[in-house]
Image 1 (cartoon, one colour):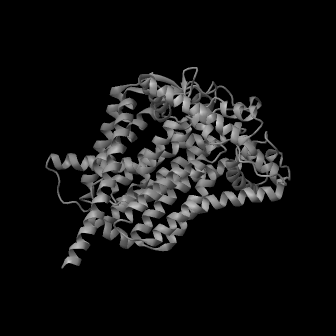
Image 2 (cartoon, one colour):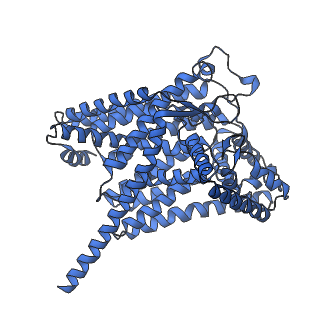
Image 3 (tube, rainbow, N blue to C red):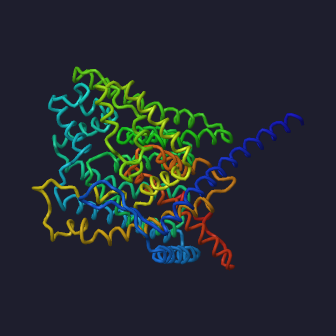
Length: 539
């Protein structure tokens, strides 16, 4: 009897901790998105294409934002009511048709975008695709000494190695092949998000609303021409989340192997995938309180270990191929240092100070880190002594990243080498000039809709007994928000979290519509549980 009571007490304790974790995610995420929704309702930020990387703020159309929420909510309600009258087969057909249309739409527009102009890579993109080409030709100058690009930024070697692999098949300097691959990844992102959604709800209404909203995600389309790891890393990250949820339902170890692979490739493309890995580790540790799943725990440990081993292997490979010693590069603390300073009214954005400091000490990583830490401590002390200035600084820094509906996609997507500049009267040129305000306004409305839907998810979709593994993406978004407060600011870094939100924002509107229907006495009998069973059988 006493042993039974002890077991019951332990189970109750573990359940209480899991519930507390859900409440923490709900509370922190809710507070963050109340803040973002409030400012997205009233203001917006943007960077003009063809100019300097300076974020600008302007007043937003409050009523336009609010009015845009009405058709989404009404359509969700109508579709939920229709579900009660339609068979499972019809619902599956409508869901499949809607997501297929979204995939083809994103693919068609992306294909047009990458073929509409010759966008020769600039900046980091040029070094990545150029470095991969040079390395295949036996030229390893990018690894040479203090001034070598890959000596300063060794983390880029992951993406360069993957680009080398691509160029083995399509030929060196073939950046257009990279862009076409990004088109496929953009289509894959739409499908992967749909798969995540279906692991949480098989609602036809949710599938249709997700397909409609993700079809309007123009930043995803505009970034397909960006010869960098952003779009590929988002695809592999979303696939990793889906495989986790799939495993959570089926308990088949193959999904865990796929998750480790997806996380590793996502990490090699963009190292900020580390935030998703941290979110995964935290969620799994909490999940272990209720379900002792050691296969999942082991796979999660591999998600942290394998990407690190992959980078170590890539570093060693390039050492052996080039004969150059691996450099630690510019220390990460310099990006925090840069992210805490205001230069010409711009809060925390890139100002080249990290590279200048690194050069000034002749590439000594330890000295660079030492001086950066000193500057960071001094700046934090200064902010602590002036709380009102600190609030304004971090407010501007956060909003200039999270409240920028285009996420710099047109700023980067309309960079042309002079001889390849498209005609002024072409549609692609007008998107970056005459049509820019219209595109910005459209994306601004969508951003508000998604942010509000994600807030609904935190408030209505996370319950005391919710499966914490379902919240991995939400935890990653929270982590990305907190990380953006300290790190070098750039709206482009926020795009992955924005894309992560679409399935969950859809569920947020579903929960809101269901709450409204219940309030007005239209609760009825939901077929969702029956549909889940029938859907799983047919799947």
